[in-house]
Image (cartoon, rainbow, N blue to C red; front, side, top):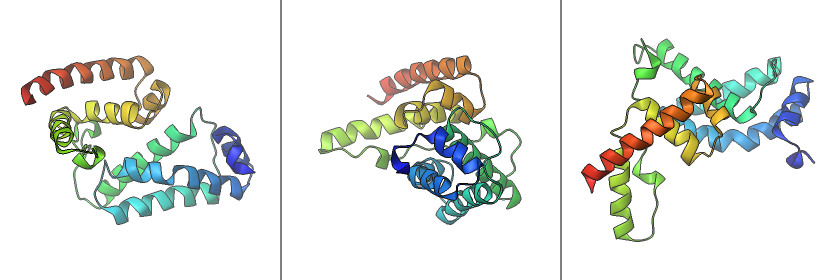
Length: 182
């Protein structure tokens, strides 16, 4: 019954105390949150704890705000939780989160059939990993995860036009870097 319900309908139902709706949101977004979180940290225990904590807080308090995109809200919330966990654990000193190079695109993101394609993909990854963290993040969210510009804007906390400009700049830089690896 709930599988055909939209995310916003589930969010609204969860805000009204429907815990089954929140459970459905968890089922829909758990894998995406894990995939996104692994780009921020390799500590899977920390990642899973923070995803569970995010949904536990929503379970206890209920969603208390209206959102345009549930997906973007959950990704952004997880990102903040992980940054907070890093600060709390004093694993790193965060002065400017936008300058942290936590975002990595791994070779595993590109599973290809034959060796020639694998070599091409390796060069792509090397070029992407040369980009600044914000450019890697916008490419990951927009291209690999298929988020809309509005959703990327919400996750990265930058306005719509800045997302478009950042993606354009990232793709230009990527093309230049790719030429060096070819």
